[in-house]
Image (cartoon, rainbow, N blue to C red; front, side, top):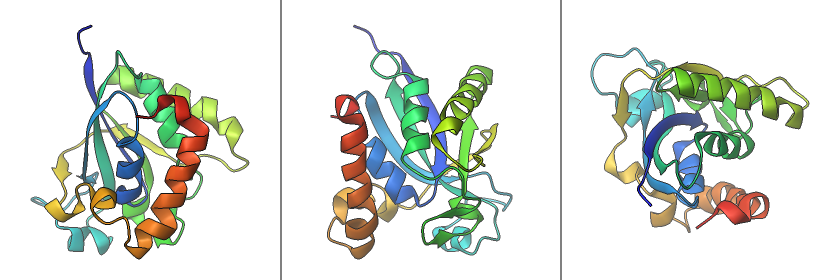
Length: 178
């Protein structure tokens, strides 16, 4: 069977968390941590992003085979593995860089994303605040942010935030995981 490679870009708090989630999903070919949605000139640095002054979000760019997992399934996993109802916050991570956002790549992605947001709204008591906007420039994050969880599983943040998130992922989506 030939591949149907597609790309999506999403942000849901710390990119280490959502990168670790999507590296587990069947049909995902590649996950790259990065930044998007800001207004600073040139390629931003992690330090600049953390200041909250650039307007960028921590995001991941997911390359996936749509013959194995649909864009809709990718978004449902995304929307249910972070809290899309908190504005500019995920857990203890606070700031615009941690906002929930879907950067669509074309009108089809925009339409599907809107449908997914409406569909999963019933899962939450509070209103979903996930931004849905066209993808501006995507900047790849520094090398030490790539594969962060895989390379740092014993680090405190990984043990206390990411490992439990992956346990929940396995319970919810065991049939979709590698």
